[in-house]
Amino acid sequence: MIVETGRFGRITITEAEEIRIPHGLLGFPECTRFCLVDPGDETLILWLQSLDQPGVVFPVLEPKIFKPDYTVRLSGQELRELKLDNVNQSAVFSILTVPDDITQMSANLKAPLVLNLREQIGRQVVLQENEYGIKHAMFKELRTHLVAIRSHQNSRSPEAIGVSQPVTVNSIPPSLTVRSLQG
Image (cartoon, rainbow, N blue to C red; front, side, top):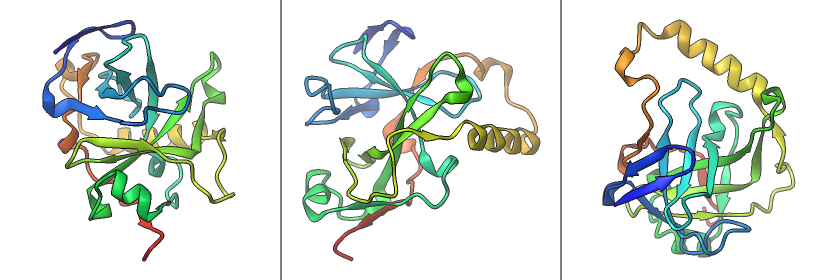
């Protein structure tokens, strides 16, 4: 499938890259088909691109990158909707807000996106824990993480930098941050 996007231009999506979010995202219930796009930069931020409305795209990031102790507790109902029999088959992303002053970037930890990597389905869940907010400041932690990565990298092939491409869902490593309320 070829999608003409506002941010990335024309991208080709395969079945292995499509993510179904049956209930849509908060405020966007009509958008139920997405893909993750790696913009080809070194920020670790991916983009959740709607396939239903190509103008709808969200920056996302795994919260463990800037908050290592982050945990998502899912109810039995949420586990069933995600078809998750094994929480180790899931990935978690926070939707980011990136203002003009990127040092004020924040992450929504209260309502993460949880993906079942095997089934390629997702759901935005609203966590019941009061410890997480919708505007968690995280620029400083992300910058520290990026500096640490760069200091350990030998080099990245020049042709890989700056090329936006969809991410194959089953190539995403599990987040290991999902817990069941049952167990």
